[in-house]
Image 1 (cartoon, rainbow, N blue to C red):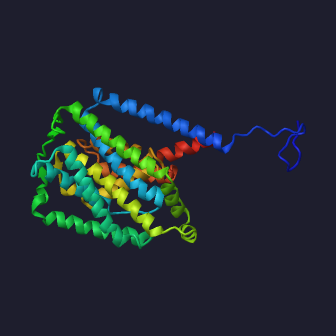
Image 2: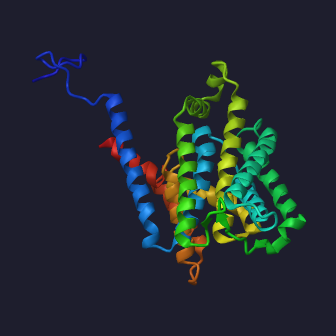
Image 3: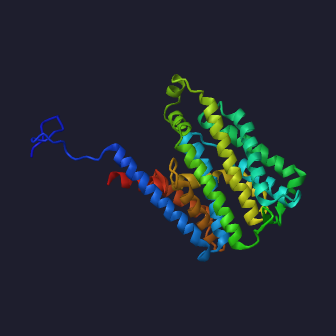
Length: 333
């Protein structure tokens, strides 16, 4: 059969078979659900095959990168100050558990709330700026937080807060048992990950993506853009704080490394390696970076150089990140 010129109809009057956009979207959603279920099943079985503390560290940084991606990937705001929320919450949780005697879950929730308040204060100062100015303001404010924690008496300066007790969850479950704390951390990670997924796929998330694509058009449609960006900033800071608080409980330490500017750089690297603007990308990037850091920690090979080379190759060859490129290839097929 031959097609009629410009009509998109064959000689017999039938349209060629093409995939409907909604059908493609449903297919992608189904694939995403299957991947998520496989990932959850794998994580549930992982502590029986891999060192649990290593996996928990990956989960903490994966949640941190996912929170950062909410701001960079879906709003288009590059923050160089997210270490303030991650490390600040680590200090809050460690101090609450060790000094105040808080139960672990209460300490983590308190630390996440504290990170949210920090996000609100920093966001109010930074959110009116755009582009590189926004990034520099967040970096400057994050460095101020760093020096505050360096001088504050409860942080113990360069020694940090060490030997943080894991305690008993709700006074019942002993988190000193590896499997108990692993599934506790996994549950918090899944809740945080689901929260980000729900935000992104809500009407609020669609407005955020509209702001990222064309902020002036969003303003012309009547949206209070600054309020939306501030809300996203606070949400991202809160979830980043949740990750930092978990890290302090898992590794039983909170140090200045958690709040230093290098930590902000690492989370940017994790997000870009995995795939900015994708749900699973930051987690993949975090797993890759943490794995390399642990694998090469005892070798003579400089880890930062290897990560830098991989980052350059990713930018040159996989500009969408690992997951982003995988999605592109699936879409083409």
